[in-house]
Amino acid sequence: MARALARHWGALVVFGAAALVPIVVRDAYFLDSLVLILLWGALSAAWNVAGGYAGQVSIGHASFFGIGAYSAALLGARWQQSPWLGMLVGIALSLAAGAAIGYLSNRLKGPYFALSTIAFSQVLLIVASRWRAFTSGSEGIPVPFRPGFATLGLGHVAWVYLALAVAVLYWGIQVWLEHSRFGYRLAGVREDEDAAQALGIPARRLKVIAVTASAALTSVCGTLWAQYVGFVDPFYVFSVDLSVRFALNTIIGGMGTALGPFLGSILITSLETYLRATLSGVKSGFTGIYLIVYGVVLILVVRFVPDGLAGVAGRLRARRARAHA
Amino acid sequence: MDPARRLGRAQIDVFAQLGVSTILLGGIYALIAVGLTLIFGIMRVVNFAHGEFLMLGMYLGFWAFTLLSMDPWFVLFVSIPLFFGIGVLTYVLVMKGVIHASHNVQIFTTVGLSTALQNTALVLWSGDFHTVRPWHALRPIRMLGTAFNLSQVVAFVIALTLTVLLFAFMRFTHTGRVMRATAQDRDAAILMGIDTDRVYRITFALGIAAVGAAGVLVSPLYAVYPTAGLQFVLLSYVVVVLGGLGDMVGALIGSLIVAAVEVAGSYWFGTAWKEIFYFLLFIGVLVFRPAGLFGQRGAENLGV
Image (cartoon, rainbow over all chains, first blue to last red; front, side, top):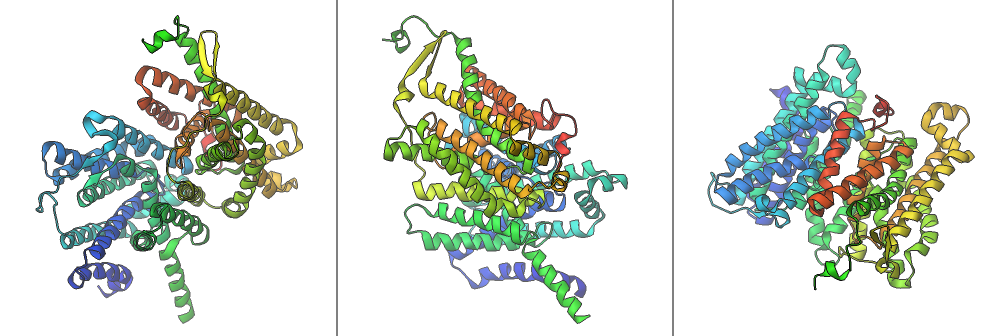
């Protein structure tokens, strides 16, 4: 127990602080940022399962986010169904889509896999924005707000704890990936697929499972996000920018580490909130300036700290351990 | 009066029109894609920011026309050296440091570059759609039962000329040979005393100069806005993967195939759905023939 605490003290600090904040702070703006930090963190953790642990770097994960968002929004707006049902439908669709992509693009590596995932998200964007009769087309869908847990019409504090529960669950899944037989075998495939296969590890099957699971986890957060924000816009939920965001958080925090996606989300989401507050007076629009910073940060991070914050922390710890020895 | 009848007798032969459209469009796509495939073939980097350089070329065409009333055809004389310079600068500042890094690092470096450039354009010039209407965009050309505007035809001719010049450069000059040698075997090239850093610098700059020229050429044909590059770059990925990443002749043939799919798709299913066909084609090719339609099996693992 003490060992586990010592190993996961970072997660304890992050999630503990998130759990305590709503008790102390009642400011809606602050709580809103917190919900978004946790949701973006969980989404990045979902991306990390495929990108970080299995080495299948996707720039099309917005596909599954959009599937989750649309499933719940359409069922809610058209047939007055509960978003929880929409979440299940989203999971089912994402499992199918993730398995299909994972299986079909199995042989693809590096840039080819990234390209095929972009293409998939673009196909979904075209369908969602042009199939007006079913999806309302490019106008998007407003998600009706109906108070109550069954309809996910919650207050800010409840949203914090719901997002926190999802975040902790996803963190736990990643920790399991670091310590389980499945996770070790996946790491073997990521580091050297040929060697792993030679040892009898079913590399392809493991990669498909990782991409499929990652898709379903992403979809769950897509549903939650749509219910939280209350509007689904096809050009946002299927955008390449959004897919890059999941990856960026994870890369900044540290790919293939359990806490990395959350550290990255804290940094990037706070930066966004800060810039939005500072630059709101600038006429040419805050989004542009924010995204320029974001692009430059991405270039600098992959160049100079490719293993992210968690990687840097790990190296510092190793150095200190050596100094003590 | 019915506007179609005002044109007189039915002078447009549908199939001839579709055929010529395909060729005109294919020529322009080729110039966009050839830069992408050149950069991939030699540097083994997929440039996810390729579309943004096209967008910058379109803005150059737009501003030169709006502020200086300069015809896009003449802007080319400025744009080619200018974008060559931008290419060298981008290589030195951004690409040089990641050329030997892992694929993930390279992918996200160019993705970051793409985001930064796109939004720089948004901040500087806003998200409004702009159009360039020089006299030749309104001048119809009729031939063999088909009709086109002069901008399209000349853009095609110039694009084709530039592509052919690039081919000739690669085939017949010493620098071109050195570049091809580096593409074939990076280590052997270094052992032969080739300065690979210089090769990469020239490669990247040539690729950017080509796509910048394409941007200027298409500025009278398409709306100019900060994310205008996205549709073209997605399409040129399709072209390049169809032809085999790194294969320049393949890129030419791929351009024609994509143009044909687009032209036929918009004619029979409407322009709203045309993109879906080449994305489906793209996914099909990536899945079943990732080395391209004419590539050898396993070629996709080169440098992967």
